[in-house]
Length: 130
Image (cartoon, rainbow, N blue to C red; front, side):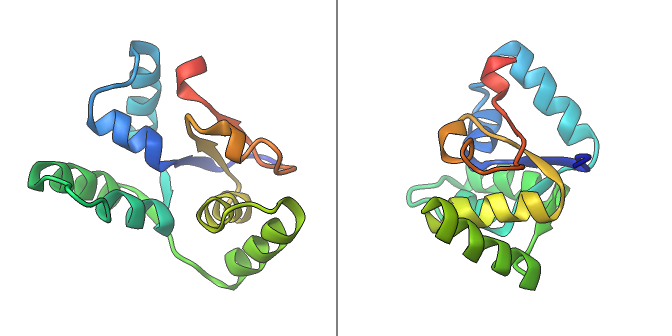
Protein backbone atom coordinates (compact mmCIF):
# COMPACT_ATOMS: atom_id res chain seq x y z
CA UNK A 1 0.00 0.00 0.00
CA UNK A 2 1.47 3.34 -1.02
CA UNK A 3 1.39 5.80 1.85
CA UNK A 4 -0.32 9.13 1.26
CA UNK A 5 0.99 11.09 4.24
CA UNK A 6 1.81 11.15 7.91
CA UNK A 7 -0.54 11.03 10.88
CA UNK A 8 1.09 12.65 13.91
CA UNK A 9 0.23 10.91 17.18
CA UNK A 10 -0.45 12.72 20.45
CA UNK A 11 2.87 11.92 22.13
CA UNK A 12 4.89 13.32 19.24
CA UNK A 13 2.72 16.46 19.10
CA UNK A 14 3.28 17.02 22.84
CA UNK A 15 7.05 16.59 22.52
CA UNK A 16 7.11 18.81 19.43
CA UNK A 17 5.20 21.65 21.09
CA UNK A 18 7.19 21.14 24.31
CA UNK A 19 10.47 21.31 22.34
CA UNK A 20 11.46 17.90 23.72
CA UNK A 21 12.32 16.15 20.45
CA UNK A 22 15.94 15.31 19.64
CA UNK A 23 17.43 17.26 16.71
CA UNK A 24 16.92 14.75 13.89
CA UNK A 25 13.34 14.04 15.06
CA UNK A 26 12.62 17.77 15.24
CA UNK A 27 13.82 18.24 11.66
CA UNK A 28 11.72 15.28 10.52
CA UNK A 29 8.57 16.66 12.18
CA UNK A 30 9.28 20.19 10.89
CA UNK A 31 9.41 18.79 7.35
CA UNK A 32 6.11 16.95 7.87
CA UNK A 33 4.38 19.99 9.33
CA UNK A 34 5.65 22.22 6.52
CA UNK A 35 3.64 20.04 4.15
CA UNK A 36 0.31 18.28 4.40
CA UNK A 37 -0.17 16.14 7.50
CA UNK A 38 -2.95 14.43 9.38
CA UNK A 39 -4.23 13.97 12.90
CA UNK A 40 -7.08 11.83 14.13
CA UNK A 41 -10.01 13.43 15.91
CA UNK A 42 -8.79 11.31 18.87
CA UNK A 43 -5.46 13.17 18.83
CA UNK A 44 -7.38 16.46 18.89
CA UNK A 45 -9.43 15.29 21.87
CA UNK A 46 -6.35 14.04 23.70
CA UNK A 47 -4.32 17.20 23.10
CA UNK A 48 -7.02 19.68 24.04
CA UNK A 49 -8.58 17.53 26.78
CA UNK A 50 -5.66 17.42 29.20
CA UNK A 51 -6.48 18.70 32.68
CA UNK A 52 -4.11 21.43 33.74
CA UNK A 53 -3.28 22.51 30.18
CA UNK A 54 -2.06 26.11 30.13
CA UNK A 55 -3.54 28.74 27.82
CA UNK A 56 -0.20 28.91 25.99
CA UNK A 57 -0.11 25.12 25.48
CA UNK A 58 -3.74 25.12 24.37
CA UNK A 59 -3.00 27.84 21.83
CA UNK A 60 0.04 25.95 20.45
CA UNK A 61 -1.90 22.67 20.24
CA UNK A 62 -4.81 24.45 18.55
CA UNK A 63 -2.45 25.98 15.96
CA UNK A 64 -0.94 22.55 15.24
CA UNK A 65 -4.38 20.93 14.96
CA UNK A 66 -5.62 23.72 12.69
CA UNK A 67 -2.63 23.16 10.39
CA UNK A 68 -3.48 19.44 10.13
CA UNK A 69 -6.13 17.62 8.18
CA UNK A 70 -8.18 16.24 11.07
CA UNK A 71 -9.60 12.81 10.22
CA UNK A 72 -13.10 12.68 11.66
CA UNK A 73 -14.97 9.45 12.32
CA UNK A 74 -16.77 8.13 9.27
CA UNK A 75 -18.28 4.76 8.42
CA UNK A 76 -15.04 3.35 6.97
CA UNK A 77 -13.01 4.35 10.03
CA UNK A 78 -15.69 3.04 12.40
CA UNK A 79 -15.82 -0.33 10.61
CA UNK A 80 -12.04 -0.59 10.51
CA UNK A 81 -11.88 0.29 14.23
CA UNK A 82 -14.34 -2.51 15.02
CA UNK A 83 -12.22 -5.01 13.09
CA UNK A 84 -8.99 -3.85 14.77
CA UNK A 85 -10.56 -4.10 18.23
CA UNK A 86 -11.77 -7.63 17.50
CA UNK A 87 -8.54 -8.84 15.88
CA UNK A 88 -5.92 -7.20 18.09
CA UNK A 89 -7.78 -6.31 21.32
CA UNK A 90 -6.49 -2.75 20.87
CA UNK A 91 -7.59 0.06 23.20
CA UNK A 92 -10.33 2.14 21.61
CA UNK A 93 -8.34 5.38 21.12
CA UNK A 94 -5.41 3.52 19.56
CA UNK A 95 -7.78 1.48 17.38
CA UNK A 96 -9.42 4.66 16.07
CA UNK A 97 -6.01 6.23 15.35
CA UNK A 98 -4.80 3.05 13.61
CA UNK A 99 -8.03 2.75 11.61
CA UNK A 100 -7.82 6.42 10.60
CA UNK A 101 -4.28 5.83 9.33
CA UNK A 102 -5.16 2.61 7.50
CA UNK A 103 -8.27 4.00 5.80
CA UNK A 104 -6.41 7.16 4.72
CA UNK A 105 -3.14 5.36 3.83
CA UNK A 106 -1.08 7.27 6.39
CA UNK A 107 2.06 6.36 8.28
CA UNK A 108 1.66 6.95 12.03
CA UNK A 109 4.44 9.03 13.57
CA UNK A 110 4.58 8.02 17.22
CA UNK A 111 6.99 7.27 20.04
CA UNK A 112 4.51 4.66 21.28
CA UNK A 113 5.09 2.06 18.58
CA UNK A 114 4.16 -0.95 20.72
CA UNK A 115 0.47 -0.01 20.57
CA UNK A 116 0.51 -0.13 16.77
CA UNK A 117 3.23 -2.58 15.69
CA UNK A 118 0.96 -5.63 15.77
CA UNK A 119 -1.54 -4.12 13.29
CA UNK A 120 -0.95 -5.75 9.92
CA UNK A 121 -0.54 -3.31 7.04
CA UNK A 122 0.02 -0.29 9.27
CA UNK A 123 3.22 1.70 8.81
CA UNK A 124 4.67 3.28 11.93
CA UNK A 125 7.70 5.56 12.38
CA UNK A 126 9.27 6.47 15.72
CA UNK A 127 10.99 9.83 15.18
CA UNK A 128 13.22 9.12 18.18
CA UNK A 129 14.77 6.23 16.24
CA UNK A 130 15.61 7.87 12.94
